[in-house]
Image (tube, rainbow over all chains, first blue to last red; front, side):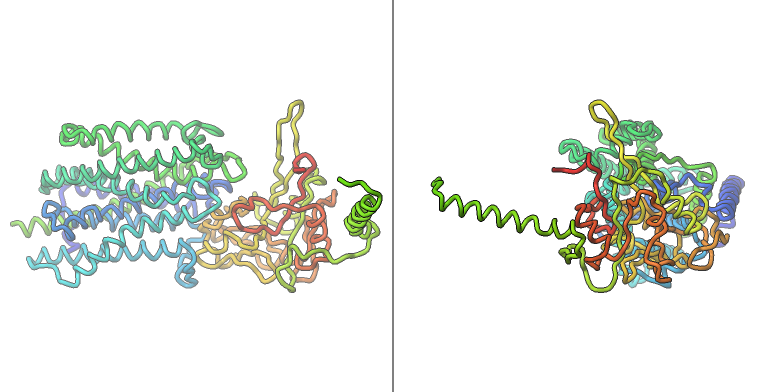
Length: 384
Length: 248
């Protein structure tokens, strides 16, 4: 079926070429990083994880959010999602690949990656994160591909597939939970050491993920003959609204418990992020986050703006971007500042770091484009 | 109260005896006689290495920092010791003392269980070490450590850096940390470069399982404290608080 990705118009090839250029630039900077070491990044002793691991966290959420389509369709037989489920699963596939690439570019010794398999350590959350992410990747590749094959042949999917689909639903929750445990299990970092973390990760993901998927599908709708059913859009935006509201509610819970009890270590990070105490680099981003979150929530809660395509699109872009600031940027950086000895050391990504990140995202988009192209071609053949 | 003569004598006797009992250990200590101290630190019979740093004596000269870099020949930009200046504004002046920070070699290290490849582990003698040949450089141990004392070697992964004191060279892209001069201890020289170098004799290094060792005695006498005890890591470096910080 992959050969279907080789047929396209000029715009398609232009897009592929753009992505390849971005990948090439990113790879070039990665070679520089290999030659000169992680010194080319902005990482330092106090902030030893940065942009890369932030993107890992955000993209795990995007990958997990496929369950918001899979669950209604397969468990509740919700027909409106029928044609879209495959796009959710393929988004998950490319998002997980992006996650794994971000882990690799963050490693100091990438050639020793296989040590994780050679010396398995069940008491390390990072080991389990590797297990669940790879498991989720294979589940979604197998499910997506087999379903597509069945559509191509015009038959019902094999019954063994049902079992894998049922397994993939809790598995999606597990990938983001384990990623949250990566942070929440560390007593040294007050900002992360929070039992709410996994829950707020999931709600943030179930808002930003479907929002991103819907935006991508709107673009796909423009350039191909895909039709998003109106009912599917309405249901997805409702899911996004509820998840986003709960996510912001959880943020307020954290702020309440920090400030009402005047818990110094918990307040310190919020003071830094929103108040600029010890460095103002993150402050503009955080107030943008507040602005985007509040406006998007208002736009999503009011039914008339939620169902209006223009205001809905604006709200979705805002949710995706606010979710990115929340998880891709402030979560990781905020966890380190200030450090347990109240020292503020700021971090900002460098140019090589930025282009490597863009390159990794371009790899994900390339995989996504190819998978979507195949899925669309198969669906079109089936319809005709 | 009945202050009859008999009662007074009895009272005086009780006070006298208890005073004598209370003063005896002090007298013995002052006379330099070794008394077995309570084994507050003891966990077994095998040696378990630890350190005491007297913040009353530390002048913040960084001699330990330099001696450590020299001894371990650490890669550029990395020193295992960081002498922090702790400042407290008082009414008319700034109260400053210095606090050297390095790996605490915790009894329950937070860094060990998180390592996905078992590259960091605790030796039988209590030293937390890093297997530089196995570490993949994921930096997860650096997130787990509450003391900010692990260092990432930013040299390129395929390079071979300076010579390691235990043989071989420092690979790039791995996490490095204080080893309590592991190579010295393995060679039978039970002291660390930082302890030797300290001009103020603020550092004591030795076997915490031996109640007669200098380090055990001084931790007991100076009521050594551990940093961030609420993290339950049980550090093996004890600090003697400066006079201004001591609680009465």
